Length: 326
Image (cartoon, rainbow, N blue to C red; front, side):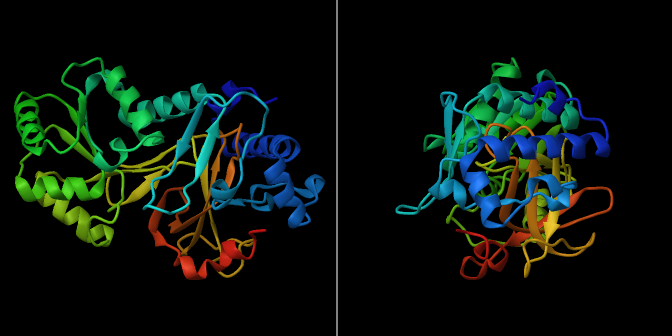
Protein backbone atom coordinates (compact mmCIF):
# COMPACT_ATOMS: atom_id res chain seq x y z
CA UNK A 1 0.00 0.00 0.00
CA UNK A 2 0.98 3.62 -0.53
CA UNK A 3 0.93 5.96 2.46
CA UNK A 4 -1.07 9.10 1.49
CA UNK A 5 1.24 11.22 3.64
CA UNK A 6 4.09 10.30 1.29
CA UNK A 7 2.10 11.84 -1.56
CA UNK A 8 1.49 15.20 0.08
CA UNK A 9 5.01 15.66 1.48
CA UNK A 10 6.97 15.34 -1.80
CA UNK A 11 9.79 17.90 -1.86
CA UNK A 12 12.03 16.95 -4.79
CA UNK A 13 11.91 15.65 -8.37
CA UNK A 14 13.76 12.52 -7.28
CA UNK A 15 11.21 11.86 -4.53
CA UNK A 16 8.36 12.40 -7.03
CA UNK A 17 9.78 9.93 -9.54
CA UNK A 18 10.49 7.30 -6.87
CA UNK A 19 6.91 7.49 -5.56
CA UNK A 20 5.42 7.61 -9.08
CA UNK A 21 7.19 4.35 -9.96
CA UNK A 22 5.91 2.81 -6.72
CA UNK A 23 2.35 3.96 -7.55
CA UNK A 24 2.74 2.59 -11.09
CA UNK A 25 3.61 -0.86 -9.78
CA UNK A 26 0.76 -0.72 -7.26
CA UNK A 27 -1.80 0.24 -9.90
CA UNK A 28 -0.48 -2.27 -12.41
CA UNK A 29 -1.00 -4.97 -9.82
CA UNK A 30 -4.38 -3.82 -8.49
CA UNK A 31 -6.14 -2.02 -11.36
CA UNK A 32 -7.47 -4.58 -13.88
CA UNK A 33 -8.24 -1.97 -16.55
CA UNK A 34 -4.80 -0.37 -16.29
CA UNK A 35 -3.04 -3.75 -16.24
CA UNK A 36 -4.95 -4.83 -19.34
CA UNK A 37 -3.88 -1.64 -21.08
CA UNK A 38 -0.25 -2.16 -20.05
CA UNK A 39 -0.45 -5.77 -21.31
CA UNK A 40 -1.81 -4.45 -24.61
CA UNK A 41 1.37 -2.37 -24.89
CA UNK A 42 3.52 -5.37 -23.89
CA UNK A 43 4.84 -3.41 -20.91
CA UNK A 44 7.58 -5.16 -18.92
CA UNK A 45 6.99 -3.77 -15.42
CA UNK A 46 10.54 -4.58 -14.32
CA UNK A 47 11.97 -2.42 -17.11
CA UNK A 48 9.95 0.69 -16.19
CA UNK A 49 12.56 2.84 -14.45
CA UNK A 50 11.54 6.43 -15.32
CA UNK A 51 8.43 8.58 -15.66
CA UNK A 52 8.69 8.50 -19.45
CA UNK A 53 8.50 4.69 -19.49
CA UNK A 54 5.22 4.56 -17.54
CA UNK A 55 2.17 3.85 -19.77
CA UNK A 56 -0.51 6.57 -19.68
CA UNK A 57 -4.11 5.40 -19.83
CA UNK A 58 -6.16 7.27 -22.47
CA UNK A 59 -8.79 9.33 -20.67
CA UNK A 60 -11.56 7.79 -22.81
CA UNK A 61 -11.34 4.63 -20.68
CA UNK A 62 -13.26 6.48 -17.96
CA UNK A 63 -16.25 6.50 -20.34
CA UNK A 64 -16.26 2.75 -20.90
CA UNK A 65 -14.61 1.10 -17.87
CA UNK A 66 -14.60 1.23 -14.08
CA UNK A 67 -11.07 2.46 -13.41
CA UNK A 68 -10.32 1.51 -9.79
CA UNK A 69 -7.28 0.16 -7.96
CA UNK A 70 -8.94 -1.40 -4.92
CA UNK A 71 -12.10 -3.23 -3.87
CA UNK A 72 -13.27 -0.63 -1.33
CA UNK A 73 -16.77 0.80 -1.46
CA UNK A 74 -17.23 3.79 -3.77
CA UNK A 75 -17.79 6.94 -1.69
CA UNK A 76 -18.36 9.41 -4.55
CA UNK A 77 -18.96 9.00 -8.28
CA UNK A 78 -17.86 12.08 -10.19
CA UNK A 79 -19.17 12.49 -13.72
CA UNK A 80 -18.18 14.77 -16.58
CA UNK A 81 -20.60 17.20 -18.17
CA UNK A 82 -21.88 16.40 -21.65
CA UNK A 83 -24.67 17.15 -24.06
CA UNK A 84 -27.76 14.92 -24.14
CA UNK A 85 -26.93 11.45 -25.43
CA UNK A 86 -23.20 11.90 -25.01
CA UNK A 87 -21.31 9.22 -23.07
CA UNK A 88 -19.76 10.86 -20.01
CA UNK A 89 -16.77 9.92 -17.88
CA UNK A 90 -17.29 8.30 -14.48
CA UNK A 91 -14.61 8.57 -11.82
CA UNK A 92 -15.27 6.14 -8.97
CA UNK A 93 -13.68 7.57 -5.82
CA UNK A 94 -13.20 5.10 -2.98
CA UNK A 95 -11.52 7.58 -0.60
CA UNK A 96 -12.85 11.11 -1.02
CA UNK A 97 -10.58 12.34 1.78
CA UNK A 98 -7.67 12.10 -0.71
CA UNK A 99 -9.50 14.51 -3.01
CA UNK A 100 -10.19 16.86 -0.12
CA UNK A 101 -6.58 16.78 1.04
CA UNK A 102 -5.36 17.37 -2.51
CA UNK A 103 -7.44 20.46 -3.32
CA UNK A 104 -7.18 21.94 0.17
CA UNK A 105 -3.39 21.58 0.18
CA UNK A 106 -3.04 22.94 -3.36
CA UNK A 107 -5.28 25.94 -2.63
CA UNK A 108 -3.23 26.73 0.46
CA UNK A 109 0.00 26.45 -1.54
CA UNK A 110 -1.13 28.87 -4.26
CA UNK A 111 -3.48 31.23 -2.40
CA UNK A 112 -2.83 30.94 1.34
CA UNK A 113 -5.48 30.61 4.03
CA UNK A 114 -8.98 30.07 2.63
CA UNK A 115 -10.42 31.98 5.60
CA UNK A 116 -8.84 35.16 4.17
CA UNK A 117 -11.35 35.07 1.29
CA UNK A 118 -15.02 35.37 0.58
CA UNK A 119 -15.59 32.66 -2.04
CA UNK A 120 -18.24 33.38 -4.67
CA UNK A 121 -19.07 30.74 -7.27
CA UNK A 122 -20.72 31.33 -10.65
CA UNK A 123 -20.96 27.78 -12.00
CA UNK A 124 -24.50 27.39 -13.38
CA UNK A 125 -23.92 24.51 -15.81
CA UNK A 126 -22.15 22.51 -13.08
CA UNK A 127 -24.64 23.42 -10.37
CA UNK A 128 -27.58 22.28 -12.51
CA UNK A 129 -26.41 18.66 -12.66
CA UNK A 130 -25.25 16.10 -10.12
CA UNK A 131 -21.83 14.46 -9.84
CA UNK A 132 -19.57 17.46 -10.48
CA UNK A 133 -16.18 17.19 -8.77
CA UNK A 134 -15.76 20.95 -9.25
CA UNK A 135 -18.97 21.66 -7.31
CA UNK A 136 -17.82 19.27 -4.57
CA UNK A 137 -14.54 21.19 -4.26
CA UNK A 138 -16.00 24.69 -4.41
CA UNK A 139 -18.75 23.86 -1.92
CA UNK A 140 -16.09 22.69 0.52
CA UNK A 141 -13.98 25.83 -0.06
CA UNK A 142 -17.07 27.96 0.58
CA UNK A 143 -17.65 26.11 3.85
CA UNK A 144 -13.98 26.37 4.83
CA UNK A 145 -13.96 30.13 4.19
CA UNK A 146 -16.12 30.34 7.30
CA UNK A 147 -17.80 33.46 5.95
CA UNK A 148 -21.57 33.80 5.56
CA UNK A 149 -21.01 36.09 2.55
CA UNK A 150 -19.55 33.15 0.56
CA UNK A 151 -21.90 31.21 -1.69
CA UNK A 152 -23.12 29.99 -5.08
CA UNK A 153 -24.90 32.05 -7.72
CA UNK A 154 -26.99 30.54 -10.48
CA UNK A 155 -28.74 33.04 -12.77
CA UNK A 156 -29.14 35.81 -10.19
CA UNK A 157 -26.53 38.05 -11.85
CA UNK A 158 -27.89 41.31 -10.42
CA UNK A 159 -27.49 39.98 -6.90
CA UNK A 160 -23.92 38.88 -7.66
CA UNK A 161 -23.06 42.25 -9.23
CA UNK A 162 -24.24 44.05 -6.08
CA UNK A 163 -22.36 41.61 -3.82
CA UNK A 164 -19.09 41.97 -5.75
CA UNK A 165 -19.26 45.77 -5.58
CA UNK A 166 -20.15 45.75 -1.89
CA UNK A 167 -17.35 43.37 -0.86
CA UNK A 168 -14.69 44.94 -3.06
CA UNK A 169 -15.51 48.43 -1.85
CA UNK A 170 -15.23 47.21 1.73
CA UNK A 171 -11.66 46.00 1.06
CA UNK A 172 -12.62 42.34 1.44
CA UNK A 173 -10.47 39.76 -0.39
CA UNK A 174 -12.79 37.94 -2.78
CA UNK A 175 -12.30 34.89 -4.97
CA UNK A 176 -14.84 34.64 -7.79
CA UNK A 177 -14.72 31.20 -9.41
CA UNK A 178 -16.70 31.06 -12.62
CA UNK A 179 -17.34 29.00 -15.72
CA UNK A 180 -16.11 30.98 -18.71
CA UNK A 181 -19.39 31.72 -20.49
CA UNK A 182 -21.04 32.91 -17.25
CA UNK A 183 -18.16 35.31 -16.50
CA UNK A 184 -18.61 36.74 -20.01
CA UNK A 185 -22.35 37.10 -19.38
CA UNK A 186 -21.56 38.96 -16.15
CA UNK A 187 -19.22 41.56 -17.70
CA UNK A 188 -21.71 42.15 -20.51
CA UNK A 189 -24.24 43.18 -17.86
CA UNK A 190 -21.84 45.27 -15.77
CA UNK A 191 -18.40 46.84 -16.05
CA UNK A 192 -16.38 46.53 -12.84
CA UNK A 193 -13.27 48.15 -11.40
CA UNK A 194 -12.31 45.55 -8.80
CA UNK A 195 -9.30 46.10 -6.52
CA UNK A 196 -9.53 43.22 -4.04
CA UNK A 197 -11.01 40.43 -6.16
CA UNK A 198 -9.39 37.46 -7.89
CA UNK A 199 -11.25 36.22 -10.97
CA UNK A 200 -10.67 32.52 -11.61
CA UNK A 201 -12.09 30.92 -14.74
CA UNK A 202 -12.56 27.18 -14.84
CA UNK A 203 -12.81 26.99 -18.64
CA UNK A 204 -15.70 25.88 -20.76
CA UNK A 205 -18.28 27.50 -22.98
CA UNK A 206 -20.53 24.41 -22.52
CA UNK A 207 -22.04 25.08 -25.94
CA UNK A 208 -23.33 28.48 -24.79
CA UNK A 209 -20.89 30.60 -26.82
CA UNK A 210 -18.29 30.20 -29.52
CA UNK A 211 -14.88 29.10 -28.29
CA UNK A 212 -12.20 31.80 -28.30
CA UNK A 213 -8.45 31.85 -27.81
CA UNK A 214 -7.21 32.52 -24.30
CA UNK A 215 -5.63 35.90 -25.11
CA UNK A 216 -8.91 37.25 -26.48
CA UNK A 217 -10.95 35.79 -23.62
CA UNK A 218 -8.67 37.11 -20.88
CA UNK A 219 -8.49 40.56 -22.46
CA UNK A 220 -12.30 40.80 -22.42
CA UNK A 221 -12.47 39.57 -18.81
CA UNK A 222 -9.62 41.82 -17.61
CA UNK A 223 -11.31 44.85 -19.15
CA UNK A 224 -14.74 43.82 -17.89
CA UNK A 225 -13.69 43.21 -14.29
CA UNK A 226 -11.02 45.93 -14.19
CA UNK A 227 -8.32 43.49 -13.08
CA UNK A 228 -4.71 42.99 -14.19
CA UNK A 229 -4.90 39.24 -14.78
CA UNK A 230 -7.30 36.31 -14.92
CA UNK A 231 -6.50 33.23 -12.87
CA UNK A 232 -7.39 29.75 -14.12
CA UNK A 233 -7.86 26.26 -12.71
CA UNK A 234 -6.87 23.14 -14.67
CA UNK A 235 -8.63 20.05 -13.41
CA UNK A 236 -10.93 17.36 -14.70
CA UNK A 237 -13.40 14.72 -13.59
CA UNK A 238 -10.84 11.95 -13.96
CA UNK A 239 -8.25 13.61 -11.67
CA UNK A 240 -8.09 14.40 -7.95
CA UNK A 241 -5.64 17.30 -8.30
CA UNK A 242 -5.63 20.70 -9.98
CA UNK A 243 -3.01 22.99 -11.47
CA UNK A 244 -3.44 26.76 -11.16
CA UNK A 245 -2.54 29.74 -13.31
CA UNK A 246 -2.08 33.09 -11.59
CA UNK A 247 -2.20 34.82 -14.99
CA UNK A 248 -1.14 34.65 -18.66
CA UNK A 249 -2.50 31.09 -18.94
CA UNK A 250 0.69 29.56 -17.50
CA UNK A 251 -0.14 26.77 -15.04
CA UNK A 252 1.85 25.33 -12.16
CA UNK A 253 1.22 22.00 -10.47
CA UNK A 254 1.31 21.12 -6.79
CA UNK A 255 4.23 18.89 -5.79
CA UNK A 256 2.29 15.62 -6.26
CA UNK A 257 1.17 16.40 -9.84
CA UNK A 258 3.23 16.67 -13.01
CA UNK A 259 2.72 17.13 -16.75
CA UNK A 260 4.49 15.38 -19.62
CA UNK A 261 3.94 16.34 -23.27
CA UNK A 262 3.64 13.43 -25.71
CA UNK A 263 4.19 13.48 -29.45
CA UNK A 264 0.86 13.84 -31.27
CA UNK A 265 1.96 11.32 -33.92
CA UNK A 266 3.47 8.74 -31.53
CA UNK A 267 1.83 8.59 -28.11
CA UNK A 268 4.72 6.62 -26.60
CA UNK A 269 7.35 9.32 -27.19
CA UNK A 270 7.74 12.82 -25.75
CA UNK A 271 8.56 16.23 -27.19
CA UNK A 272 11.08 18.77 -25.93
CA UNK A 273 10.27 21.73 -23.68
CA UNK A 274 8.42 24.50 -25.49
CA UNK A 275 7.03 22.20 -28.20
CA UNK A 276 3.33 21.42 -28.60
CA UNK A 277 1.95 17.95 -27.97
CA UNK A 278 -0.64 15.96 -26.05
CA UNK A 279 -0.91 16.54 -22.30
CA UNK A 280 -0.18 13.55 -20.08
CA UNK A 281 -0.94 14.04 -16.39
CA UNK A 282 0.62 12.30 -13.40
CA UNK A 283 -1.67 12.77 -10.39
CA UNK A 284 -0.31 10.81 -7.45
CA UNK A 285 -3.36 11.69 -5.32
CA UNK A 286 -5.38 9.53 -7.71
CA UNK A 287 -3.89 6.40 -6.19
CA UNK A 288 -7.15 4.42 -5.95
CA UNK A 289 -7.99 5.03 -9.61
CA UNK A 290 -5.27 5.73 -12.19
CA UNK A 291 -2.48 8.26 -11.64
CA UNK A 292 -1.23 8.24 -15.24
CA UNK A 293 -3.69 9.72 -17.74
CA UNK A 294 -3.29 10.74 -21.37
CA UNK A 295 -5.72 13.63 -21.83
CA UNK A 296 -7.20 15.01 -25.04
CA UNK A 297 -5.67 18.42 -24.37
CA UNK A 298 -2.87 19.98 -26.40
CA UNK A 299 -0.22 21.91 -24.54
CA UNK A 300 3.42 22.78 -24.07
CA UNK A 301 5.69 22.50 -21.04
CA UNK A 302 8.55 24.78 -20.00
CA UNK A 303 11.87 23.96 -18.30
CA UNK A 304 10.57 25.11 -14.88
CA UNK A 305 7.72 22.54 -15.17
CA UNK A 306 5.04 25.18 -15.79
CA UNK A 307 2.79 24.54 -18.78
CA UNK A 308 0.16 26.01 -21.08
CA UNK A 309 -3.00 24.41 -22.44
CA UNK A 310 -3.47 25.34 -26.08
CA UNK A 311 -6.65 23.52 -27.06
CA UNK A 312 -7.95 20.03 -27.66
CA UNK A 313 -7.38 17.30 -30.20
CA UNK A 314 -9.88 17.14 -33.02
CA UNK A 315 -12.02 14.16 -31.99
CA UNK A 316 -11.88 12.80 -35.53
CA UNK A 317 -8.10 12.55 -35.39
CA UNK A 318 -6.77 11.80 -31.93
CA UNK A 319 -3.90 9.81 -33.38
CA UNK A 320 -1.93 9.66 -30.15
CA UNK A 321 -4.88 8.17 -28.27
CA UNK A 322 -6.75 6.18 -30.87
CA UNK A 323 -3.69 4.06 -31.54
CA UNK A 324 -3.86 2.88 -27.97
CA UNK A 325 -7.55 2.34 -27.24
CA UNK A 326 -8.40 -1.34 -27.10
